[in-house]
Length: 392
Image (cartoon, rainbow, N blue to C red; front, side, top):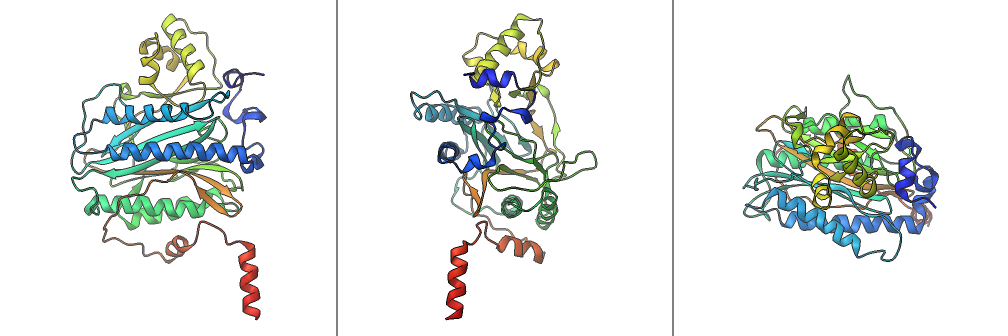
């Protein structure tokens, strides 16, 4: 039997993952007890790690240390489960800690930056068990008294992210369509004087595939569109919301800041440099299909980061560049893993937001009605009982 590494090296693209690894090729797989157990085990670790990183987000804490804490906890927690079984497990997305106008993907090799009072901090990370992925992101406002409600512009931002996420949870459900999602999100963002960040997508996920082909573009643009599709029962999504107080147009300021990469499954090339071949060999063995942190790769590898250059030049790696809003703006991020089940959406990664006080409200009646609906469908038996009671 081929190992997962060998299997993925022979894949043509993420869309052509072999049947034994593709959860959405037979969506009923998600209902199997063993699969749900792996999803929820990954989610439990994800929730615990993110909570721990949040607790360490205090005035004076180093960003680099927070990233190390998150990644080390993921690996330590995964090492304690499914012992003795040939199951791949570990980091599905490296711990990233992005402050204020940094939109995301900030996971430095070395950095003396520390958290300050009033900072808007985004934490983003992911875990997988046997390729079944749980991802999560949340936003924390740093304060000497973290139990006090957030106020001012940061409160508007948190409220916007929260209600956009809640709306997306209710729109991304079986029978609805991709085209139905972005409009309500835009209306909510405008209600709080914020914008959705361009380029952010909610992706479906498959076993060993963190960014599937079915996706929702939160903010459609003239130069960026996605195909419409119907959401179906037993699919899995990383519902991803990023909002800004600025124009929402994220930019790459310095490509050298990039430290998160993913192996391009459908690309092969005969590298010329020994350093390039060495580092690619390490990546193929340790991170054949999941995003990985450069610091983890270099910490236990004899290869040099200079070998990455040739790999990137020939498209062997996908880079996750550090993105920035305009200086002075603030950005919030909420992401959760959601299973589309028969009885409604099951959000398996959850991190409660801080309380917030905002003077802004949602006036649109359609949006208010949407937010008032449950993410869970009423059970048929309950409906039958109600009908019987009304007849008595």
